[in-house]
Image 1 (cartoon, one colour):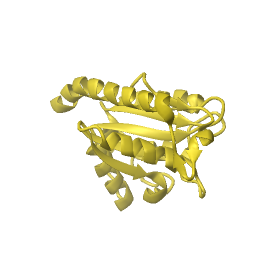
Image 2 (cartoon, rainbow, N blue to C red):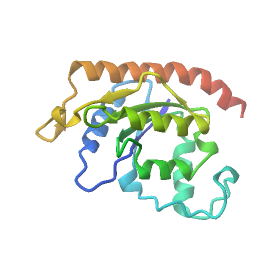
Image 3 (cartoon, one colour):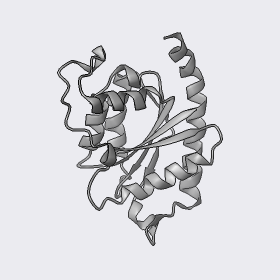
Image 4 (cartoon, rainbow, N blue to C red):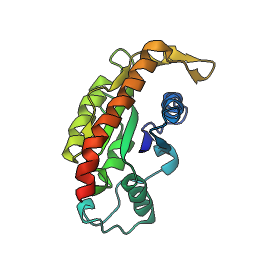
Length: 187
């Protein structure tokens, strides 16, 4: 299964990349996955600048064509996102808005992080967007409250509970993908 892990934080000095690195390394341990990291800070999409609606797939910009190819090649995704002002990040929403059909019928796991809420409000807002594009967010999302308390010497140290939760989410993504693969294969 081709799993893409999207890092939603693009801020200079961001600590969320440490969470993404943990998710990425744990995903690589699962033999069911072929993993690719899509860091929105590195991809650096501009604000949506295509003249045509994404559902038409009539892309005029190379950055959109490249982004389309990456997402179209995914079987499933994990989105690693902070919560900003009770919501998802603007770069993540923008990256989603660039495309339409490429997202359809794919399982999505959400790893959110923040303070007390652990990013749960961002997750709830994100789910509305994902389901509109025919993605299937798995119930087993992983909120990480007070995530900075897990950072030790520049490395995210999740502990047993978060590790167990992450692998439970991976297991659910694999199960849900089996059903969605049938739909994707029918075109």
